[in-house]
Image (cartoon, rainbow, N blue to C red):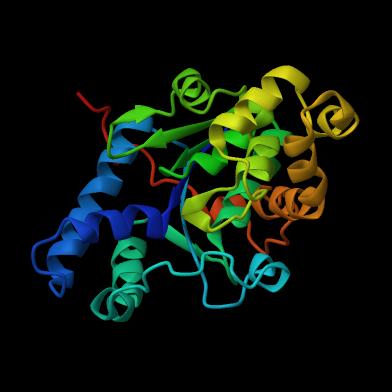
Length: 259
């Protein structure tokens, strides 16, 4: 079985950069990122590996909702200028990159889903909880910083909803990290309570007359915003990818299992 390790490039690099005392020292960062990638390869022993990077193009989400990710800090200048050399260094070590036109998330989701459709397995290296919506049993998510797989049960307990309800949850409560709005006046606690009672948005909106007048009005007034937020949170898995899997094959047995 092919196993593809998909590394969310900027998720890994920006978090490592944020903990670096000298933010202009790209040589030190490159060394740390390279060591992290080698550790990932040793531990997971994939047949293939790819780094996926965000591009400079405007995402379709931004076109749909101009405030999407508004206020997020821009990439530090030294890091932005050093990315080309960093990618080349990793390529020289046999870890090739895929550069998305805009957001990496949809490319990562497409890669993972297409591989599993053909009997493979995908391991996504990222701390982004949005990938938890990919429900295929052959797709897993690894957090390099906590050195563990995403604990779906812990995430469900934290949010108060089942994994299958994540998109409905974001539609109601939004996602502050990505500036997905949700419905004004409906917070995470209310969203979880509503989904425990009605399971899905469709059931909820078919049952507004069973709710209190104030909450029913919030939901009715926010119907379009809920629909928009659902779209913004949902990962696309149909991105055209002009790549071949063999471009990302790991060099045979260059790594040994982690201890």
